[in-house]
Length: 316
Image (cartoon, rainbow, N blue to C red; front, side):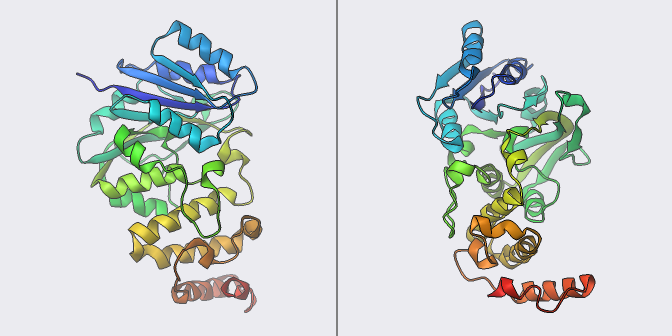
């Protein structure tokens, strides 16, 4: 018997594009699905569009919040209502190919934590014309350590579960409402990093992950998305804050290496202080050694021929 897959669609104010997202979910060639849609008190006609789908197709289970609960709480309401063994998070502005589940499910064997596919990021309502990301050389099974290393090294691996499937039990356990941090950044509201933690925590609990190199997920780039609307390093800095929590608590041997990368980010993104990120120590709950960072910065100074005191402010 094929497993029941819960396609989880949290949504807010997407009246013009939610129909296309729902159609891509319902078109799956894997026929044992439920589509859980939770409208976070939209102020436009999103709920009316969702209701029309639910009336026509009993696979669509539609819910509406009386008030806006913030993005992550809405994600978790989708999770609470899911009945499937497998979960597929589908953001309300994204699409998936009709054979997304058909091609990813066979790779989700018992020692595989998640399976993700290549992605096309598109604009102008032309998914097939998008730029391709997150493709590895071959479809198959890979060591989870490879994924974790790619993420910590800022290489081409997905942060967003919009291109992946997980077991629902892992989503329940690893999709956190908030991420503890020293600077009191509210992950439940800005929602930058919770998705990454789902990947990292799941990868740390399984030996392998699966990958389908074909681009079967389509991410829409537009002004209303979290990623597109996050400027001045906000996205990468908050992902770094999430990575710091993961490394400090689950992979401490990588702490100094990550700290060195964060130091360079603070140099690059001068608006980091807007987010209460003043120095590397703001990213970690315990002391971090800056010896390796200082060596790295010395090399940068020589390469870029920057003034001797340029980086001093970061070590105050």
